Length: 63
Length: 406
Image 1 (cartoon, rainbow over the protein chains, first blue to last red):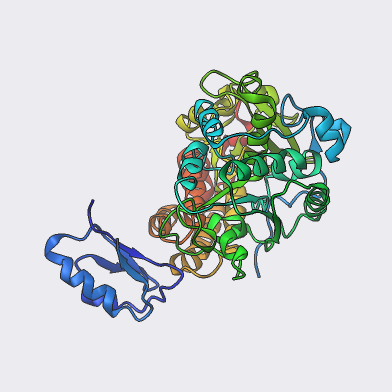
Image 2 (cartoon, each protein chain N blue to C red):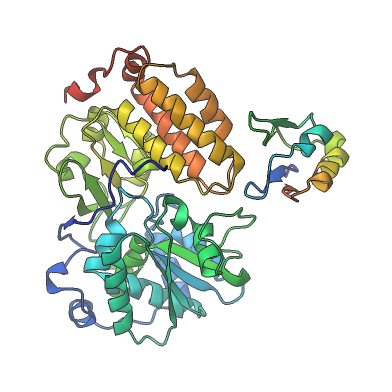
């Protein structure tokens, strides 16, 4: 199964740090909340882990 | 200020006698009358119950039509499970669980108790609605009559649309705010206090109760080979909402109340889909059949509004936007924006481009299905009545939907 980034929506406060770390996979909507564009590729795996780590709300998970 | 529900939560209901669940309702709601009709609640083994619900292809009646056998099997594979009867019925246009509470509460409880015994469950939890006082009184009276040797805990949900969502119910049971949270695993795997949790709505438990009491053969007396049994439907038009028990395979036009003929209807409730009259008239009551017609049966709700579908949808989206739990950013920002864009279309101040854009932004981005259901309704309107939508958007007012010929 492909690795996915999942957002814990009630925890997410739209700070946008995940987008700065991983713009290849995460856009922001007009209110600043993340839009996950697709599964995590092997090349982006380390960056995805970093995106999870920098979230101040611990609202991002790799599943 | 939150918009009011376009269909009020019913204070008065017409509940029609039916072939199975709603048979014998003339005898009253007492446990004695229930036992006189059905006899004692038999002990049923987990293996036998699983085999029956599997053979009958029984599905959950809360709206998603999830196979009950899969849930039952899943909860039986872990620690001692918990059984939850979710009577909260957050959808204002649905009143079937209310109808069961007020006519056959012991059928609902029999289903839950028999299953709890078969699973050796630690307890049965009954979740009652926050805005339907008659249901609360009826269920509490019925629970007080029981002595099954199974602990029954009662919880009172908040009077909001999303309070009945499965995770919101588990939050309520845990003593936290009655609002949805992210489900990382299904509640059948890990739910209340981490236990496998078998959570179903009132009608599902009544169907299980009926099965346990009359057996698989008795259950098959109604419905079709592929969809045995009956289902409850709520019809809301001009008058008092009506709850009817309908055999699977019945033509919907045969059970529609007067006044529904020739008009479009909203099928499946506020998270549902629009049906033009010719679609509704030719459809049969069926989970698979109605899904293939893009009008999923859902929880069996059919609403026939007096207004045109565009105006009515706009009012429903206004209401749904106000019912967001205000926890998930895309929902509490996106639904009010979607409601505003729908108002623009309905009043001839804007096109559908913004509606479609917001629908794409909001969908699948929340802890619960509230944004998804709202998007389903809006997309169904655009797909089913493109001419009426365009007429509204261009300021020409209502199109031909209301006068559509049968």
